[in-house]
Length: 482
Image (cartoon, rainbow, N blue to C red):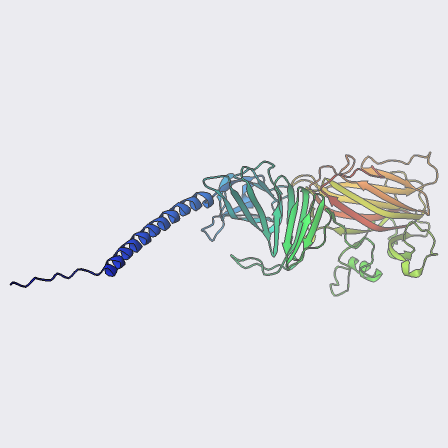
């Protein structure tokens, strides 16, 4: 009998193990496919959601083009732009400090946001980007390196999230849409530049809001600014508390910074080693041929105005500029002080000030000439402003205030057509305030070089203190003199 051949059959457990392994492979493959499909879908969604396009702008020259330079983002040298030069992200625009007064150039960005640049301004378009496929986001980041720039932002924006940011030194400023803002970088004297590099000396930053809201960040602090407010950030970026958006142009208006000798030493230019004032400069002029040059500048001390006697505590006494001439003189002589504005006495651009208010306390104790004299120019207190209307090549113009003393309101003085007049009561302190943007003064001046305060006449004894000249973006019409 033949033997039966035996065939080995896999064990049931082995077959189940193979089946499980096969299902595991199928599940892993399916999972990997789903992950790859989901990742591709997410990547496509993210790309369509977060993809950004670079944008640009247009440079519009408002002063002679030779005062404006432009640097492409991939270049190291500046070149002269076209009258309406196309700009891209990373480009930089710089205005020569001697470009004149008012707006030297305007950068109109892709969304109609405008940057008006004054002489000395320097701005880099650090980032200009918008969402490519949707209306999700717009980012505008500007780096202001120098000078004064005004930012005007549109009210209606096509993107749901918008960032307008200006980086100035160590200070960051976020601007809200629909507002108007100004940022000025204030450099200390002796600022040092190296070719192709930023200044070595740290700067202060002045931020003001005309309309809208701004957030100022620096040194770990945050300040919110509303319309009509400003802050000043120190070189570390630390912002001050908000204050009204006004700027004082006159220094040392109370004559407290220097001694009488230091003020009078300004009349001795050939001895530079003498200690001297750097705010007010004393001067004198022979107003009539043959006049004896014996008018003097000094300081008087007494109770603060409007007190006329010295019955207050001596610790409350204040200084006043004192112009005095005596001896029954018969010819006119001028004695006064002057202050020139701006860095290096170059004057200041006042084109942004819709309001320019001068104020002072004045007192006349003696004037030997009745009223304003035969020519209407012999006044014991006179204030003269020197400036220009539009361009550096314009002739310098002046506006002059004459203050005289009289108790008779019915007597009219001789009037010079180039002067404005104010009568005050003798011996009393009087507060003079005038809006220089009024039609009688300097309504359209863009530049102010100096202010002079002086006495003109035969014998006089007059005083002035608390001198102030405040510029503002808002017009104030409360004058006492027009």
